[in-house]
Image (cartoon, rainbow, N blue to C red; front, side, top):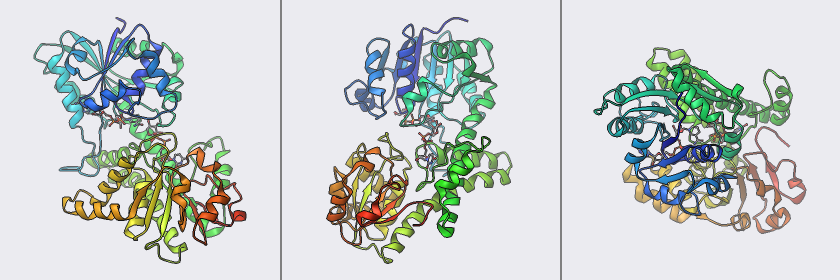
Length: 467
Ligand code: NAD
Ligand code: UDX
């Protein structure tokens, strides 16, 4: 096996950036270049303010940047000079044509494959890092085989399992690294890269298709756990059982395990919904409607959970939130990230705005522009004619503020939508005094559950229990 000396990663996003920063840190003998067509993003990676927030990321980028880690827009030369090319571009849900709303849009993957075929010479290993439908490597191989220079390629699948908010930790000490491929030599070359810091027994190798399918399956199973416990949370609210107690009780069964059983306002993030919908589409494509329907239920349950949360707020606030100020605590889809993609907050805020509420939103990491853009997009729902009306709705009813205190002043209710640690540490008596009475707290993450909010005077409701 010829050791890898130069790596190029196409796509400087939430996966490409942190993953390559970790490889560069752990493999000082390998030159890593991360390329992107988005010049602003590359400029951010080269600045002091990185485009994504992840605990510990700044430090590892600073350690290697300019040494063996480079962020650049010079896509062609970075590909041409690399021995190994990771494709880490986005694979969003297709919003047009065949499979719209379900299938993955593979346009960016195909463009990368064509670019690699165009500018490569000699032999290269192409690694699918993006999450892809099973059998995508077939298309990638077909495109690469058309290289006009006669370059040859091995294609590997190496899906990424990091979770946002803990990306650095996950990359440093992964449960496993999965590598699927056909050529032993190519698999060995990538195994050697990871073996710089990951114990060999955690480097799993499979055939290409198992590797591709394992990524969608892992996300489907994880999301299914959240939807399963969320379904039980509804039953808990109806029966005075407590979902956290139920989760603890079932989670101590070693066959079930304690992780990923935290009931919430609903899962978000760029992956779960997209990957399940993609799995559903694939099952339908391969003529397996019963399997498709089984997995689709995970997404339906998640939508139900978000709706249920808003309905409960409206019902509890005497059946109207019209013209009432509601403080929104947290907009990111989970703590320790500035990512808002598919965040439950987007849908909760949309539905509250449709009920004519006034929202005062605070998130420690998400910018006001991002929040307003997300709300504009969800209210418009792809219809250009709704642009003006939704912009007006936001301008008149949404403010983004820089503290929970500002969000709560004169508010009728607080809705906790992200589990940021700082939310447990605020001066609740002072907040209570600043609010309209009765002062309601709807805790979509159960992060304030152990605090004596009732004693301070609040009417407190969480997910999956009644007091
Ligand atoms: P992202 O949108 O943050 O980043 C993708 C980047 O690719 C963008 O900066 C975009 O400009 C760039 N790009 C697109 N087409 C390009 C091209 N032709 N040439 C050069 N650059 C191009 O996406 P992400 O969150 O990093 O996700 C990337 C992939 O990894 C997806 O398939 C996703 O499903 C998967 N994944 C994501 C996570 C996560 O936590 N975000 C975890 C595991 C897997
Ligand atoms: C997920 C997978 O965990 C990761 O392996 C994959 O590579 C990408 O997709 P991510 O979406 O970044 O990672 O975060 P994750 O921690 O999985 O959380 C996803 C959503 O589920 C969040 O909104 C989170 O708040 C929610 N969640 C998670 C719950 O509501 N309850 C839980 O018990 C766990």
